[in-house]
Image (cartoon, rainbow, N blue to C red):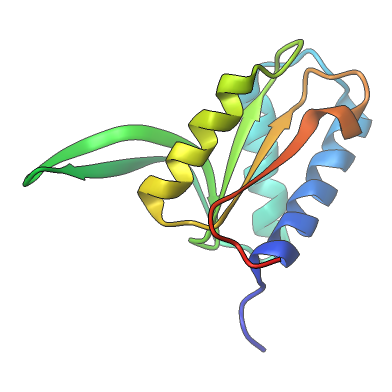
Length: 130
């Protein structure tokens, strides 16, 4: 059996995040949610990089750390985690930039700060065929 598609990864990540949010609720630091997400996703058999340094090539130079991805799942999906009252439009734009830099096609922006979990999940795509 092959590795899961981006959409299958997204389904699993959202399921894990939903259960974490349901059990813990809003209000913890992003780092707490991140550690739990890493643990739970690894328990399900996924490869997860946390705070992965992502380089950027520009005009013949390499910027070693253009940003740090909260989570990269199975090397093909970026998950950015927040624990804030409300996501701003710039957060989705940042995630799209991250997708372009890494050549990933799907990213999830998950805000654990929302009272209702469904209001805290955003999909951002970069040339993903749906």
